[in-house]
Image: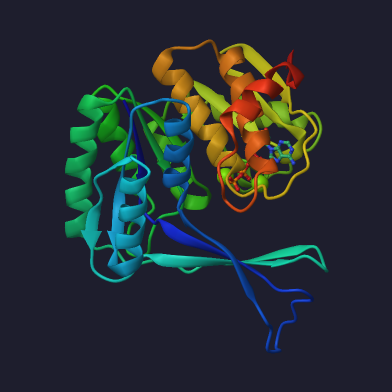
Length: 308
Ligand code: ATP
Ligand code: MG
Ligand code: MG
């Protein structure tokens, strides 16, 4: 079994406004409302891959109940800690004329230490049952930067492999716990290492991160694919050309396949190929919808994996 932990979930609301103008009244059409949050997206992909998956983290208020009901309806096991306040709603304004997407993200419900204690107990319980635990997304207000570090250490003590997908200080501190795998995108790596990672520097960045004691580092590069580094092995993946309708969740899809690969003990090259196909299919899907796994499987042979 695989568990995904989302500390700051969200409802993703996507609205369409032609010629969106700041400072004016804009007419909007609701495109879609997706229960989101990175770990929830990861769980949706894992479900499609046929994995047993359980979702946890914090939920609050009506939005929280909506997300739990959605997961139950999708037959995705959910066991969240309910906290006071309201789970956030993140707004995506899609402008088909200007071809822009503007994102407005709320900070989320504040979490205090007593609820964090409940979550730590939950993570210990899940780690005893699961081969892999995925921690993804930003930290909610109220939790310290070392929260992921503490949770990863607890999970590792109970024998679970861990994946951390976050950015900024939460990632920096989380690395001190040496998760099994991280999948930052290029921008997150640049922020973390305080250096630009274009060209040959990408390999240096991967080495730098590996040297921190991680088993696997995957740096995702959007439409340009990904670089995987593990031990002495380096693999470069090139995705098939797809019409990118919404790249939201492409990273989450990639993380899901790596969780799947770790759980099943698949070779890294095989996992990277599948991850690249599934994330490309997600980039081709609309909204934060998960890419179709069958479509992804048909694209497997179009993914190029190159050893470097
Ligand atoms: P997220 O918004 O989900 O956090 P991310 O920024 O972490 O995403 P990206 O690097 O944007 O992650 O994308 C992850 C993977 O998705 C890429 O490594 C690539 O394999 C695939 N992907 C993203 N965009 C495209 C695209 N336009 N065409 C094909 N594949 C894509
Ligand atoms: Mg991206
Ligand atoms: Mg990401």
